[in-house]
Image (cartoon, rainbow, N blue to C red; front, side):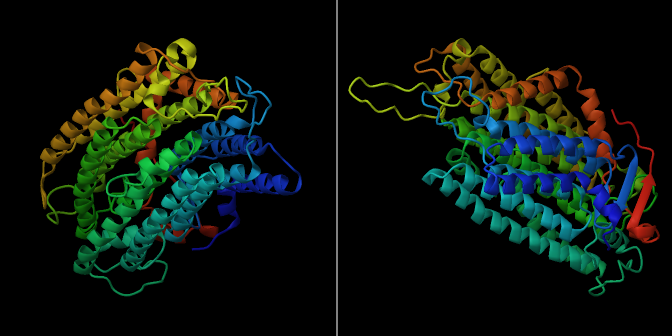
Length: 587
């Protein structure tokens, strides 16, 4: 697979981010630039404009190891939109605070932090665009490595360094597991190209294997592939679970969130989750024939999906239950939100499980899959819920960053300035509606959305997940009737939503029905406040008009193109393929 000038054109927004990162690094090192986050915001604005100008409606453009379709465009715009808001949250120390402390002492955002953050965003966008295993792994590392560097740069105290090291070592384990799954996929498909691997998997059992890029490591039989697939899926799921903070790779989240800053916790709870969803979606798409192609998929592809949906369903149920039950016991705000983040990873996996189950027609190996029978409602529900979760979560952490510190307690006998104390516990929010009503209202809206209270977008997201799960048809598979599985998963989801409402409402109760003791300074910076208000606008808009986002998510799920035909790609000049397809309008 060759990389051409067309490939670089498709990656223009990412190139802009890398250039902005270099400007932030070099200007801070040699020019004394103290406005690194301003450079990041400008770079992200330009990247958003360039990404919005590229064709995405009903078109699939493949060039070298990069594919631009509705799915990758959705992930890219979601990444840059969330990144812009997160940059404002991270830049809370750059602009003048709402309440300025005596003597200044403001900590400015550094070029190193801003440049590292831009590389993280570029890597996440590359994960969404990649149709090659090598580029996919490189993109994931461009997400992981800048993340723990950012953790180390933002907090230099003992707790911050401990959080950075914990994330670093566990990230190594997750990357190794996912790398092993990549090796297995290469062995199954005889190529690093995802389209070629998909063609090979779908052809196994239907006839002679399809040659991929003229690079075959050997002849893989259907029986060999059926044995290797569960191992491959298990390692890929473990690697993605770390980024999603899903069971069994969830245990790092509470300690790391507590040890780092609120702005870094906002990054951890959002961007890696996008990477985890993309990885799992791309792997599932290997077994799904292109929509409308009429191409059947063989028993090996059916095996992949038939093993994937029970694994995803079990992990989803356990993850949301563990996360919500842990959150009920927390008094530290960031630990509570970390457990909440674990629970939301379980919700996201429900849609992926439904997409895999609906794509499996009939019992395992009974008959080939038909492309016309596929439904990607589960994928659309996951993408929709991901967007609503990002908006509310960035808003919560933006609000906590804006609130900053509690008012210090002065001592009549001491001449030294009291040590600043961050907002850490639920009790620190007591009486916030009286001291800072705007921030209290914003936080209440975000929390109600995360709890799934109507008419906020979190409710529409959970409703779409429930609808997708209940839409799975009945069919006897290896692990039992699919419909009964997803009926049980739906019940678990609804019960967990009720459990989650308990601790979210506890925070709202503290803000509106308890009296304050110290109050907050609201010294986290006006940019964090701007991010909070922007998220409020997004959440309120989605509350009133959720259909537009859901239609966009439906088109993105429907154009998931991990299974573009490699033989068609090879016939195009300069490695470029342009495929136009009519997308069904999904409700």
